[in-house]
Length: 349
Ligand code: CP3
Image 1 (cartoon, rainbow, N blue to C red):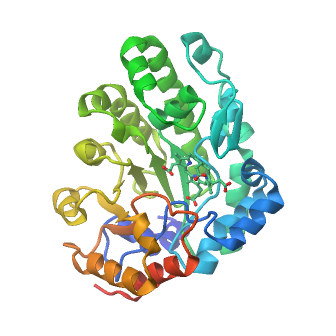
Image 2 (image 1 turned 135 degrees about the horizontal axis):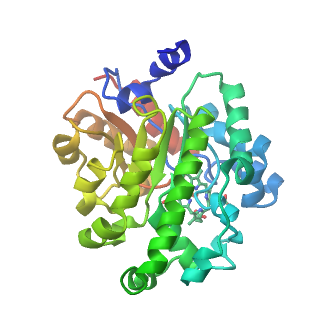
């Protein structure tokens, strides 16, 4: 093992991910770099648009570091979006309240017309952002990379706008298998290249976001989604050194698949019973989650009480990473998140 690996293995997050001894669970929060922070909003208006912020490494690195510097979370997640790599395929992405693709994918020939994704060329801004974050934090805190999983990316690529119904994509899964298969293969290949690029850029952990896979029945998930997810985790570099997390919103009925997908960590939303999941899956994988994001609107003393209840009910002393069950809301007062983080940091097993 090289010296750098030994240094990085000391981070609490990585020790929890690999089920080693920890004094308390580490904490980070989905969407931690975001609009609830006035400091984020200031940089966001300097950047003019959300996409410009993603594409400007100096600013993206700045907002990536804010939650660590201002709130004290135990990890930095690089600032970008799951949809930015799709621009490399030739999709015309913009954000207008939510993501918009001007040229959504509907047919097999739309899929065949997509360009070849080259991470160094199409997402060099991500490599530069990671480099700037690393220079700034000097290994004091682990850095997470991420990607969207193929099904979740396909939902956006097909819808072309804010998703209000999954009927269209479910119909295509069953009625246009050649098109869906070609699209899922293309997105799987993109995801593997994109994550391995981030791993080559020295991220310490990665998370695969399959936010929408929970809308599928177990049969459809097994046939149309799981093989691609398995392929992704099997194809990632630095196994056993960089942990892989897999998140599904509303994925309780898919938990056996999640736990056998090849991920080291499965990330739960707040609708799942944390203790039961740890008891059932905690020997196989680490568990991440699952505080209800709405409860961050409670007063800090209530948040403290709720977090302490969760921590004292844990059935195991390692293999747990504290997070929210989904992204933090933009109206949450920052001091409420600080109360959550401070409570976890004061806790000892
Ligand atoms: O702090 C972090 O978590 C890192 C950055 C990050 C963003 N999006 C920034 C963002 C990450 C990891 C994501 C992931 C993402 N993006 C997911 C998967 C996780 C999840 O939330 O389920 C999805 C589905 C998206 C797609 C997406 N991006 C949507 C639907 C929206 C609009 C909704 C909204 O919250 O406004 C975005 C925009 C977006 N991505 C924002 C941020 C901070 C808000 C835009 C802004 O600042 O103007």
